[in-house]
Image (cartoon, rainbow, N blue to C red; front, side, top):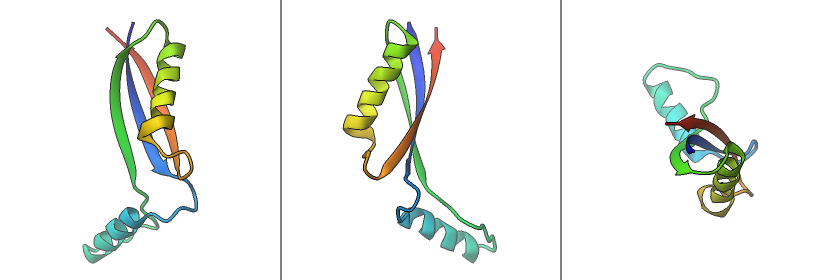
Length: 83
C-alpha cells in the first residue's frame, strides 16, 4: 500500500518561539493585533508500507531521528492511504 502523511512539527508549550514573536510584531505593524502567533512546520511524506501501522511506525521513527527534536518539539502525524 502507498501512504501519504502530513507531519506537523511545533515547539512544545513554554518554549520560546522567536519566529512567531517576529510575525506577531509584523502583523501589529500592519494593523492586525492577534493574541498570539506560534510557528510550525509541515512535512509531506509519501511511502510504501505493508500496513498503516507500519507506515505510521516508520514516520514516527523519521520524526524521532531527524525531523523533530523530541526535547523541544511536539509533532502530529496525519496518515492517509493513497492509490
